[in-house]
Length: 403
Image (cartoon, rainbow, N blue to C red; front, side, top):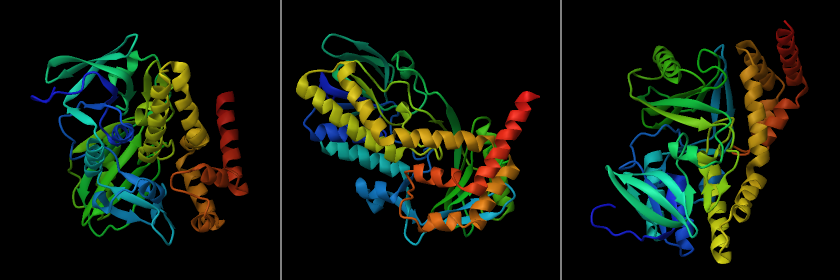
């Protein structure tokens, strides 16, 4: 399907989507000795991706991400409240790494190829047809149709792919849209996160330095993300943090809740396509890589037993929910609570976190993590002063409903 190259047809596993999660799945399965074919609808990896690419130190260490694809490391971030108050949160050691997403995607694909996987670029999978002994993928590459046979399929398309509509696995129960731009900066060294209804109602905006005088600026919003991004860029120009507000935008969707089901007959769904994303931050790289490993292990057991039925592949969903389920539920609860806060209430919460010593306590605590938000959520929502703010919010919301 790419020039004169002959692909292994049928293959053991077809992976739909050549991003890092799809590539991790392909890498693991190829290492196990299976014939893997990866379909990527883009003809090449784009230079700009609507993803800030921040991953934890734990992710870097677990997957041995080399420094060659890391822009820089960060010890923390400065949180900017709706009134402009700066609340720094920082530790003595690096807590996160900012990846060059394009280089990272390419590196992960190269690893999979080195392990034996084959990639077909510019190839969009239009439909899947189940048969007795496998799945037929109907593929279009540069307008040329082809049929590929696979014993099983892993879907890792990212958010919003039309292919998902016909799989009978449900849809993302909730989602948000993001917009991002690469800009030239002026003496900006720290990651900054902006809150408030004028920045991104219910969500946040960010300024993430990536290199010398370069940064990513973006927002997450349920509506009009380009408008809010333009506003944030203008603000940063006025504050002397970036050179110009003129920059091309990239866009992307982020699911806030998982699919109803992430497995089917000879089929698994991984990563953002499955909704395996942190609801508080929208980050999905580390969770997606973890789930890719679980998917590969599940399929390995299926090949060994010869059983690709939904009942057998359901073990994949049980595995990732054991690992991530409580984190996703707690994060979504916190996300929904935050969306109810007014700007003044957001300011009050941040002020209380600072004056009560809660931020200092979190900075020094060993049980708090960039990726595992459950402990953070529990500390914030169990703090007696913050409980007062939330109770007042609840009473106010109840009063509005009564009216």
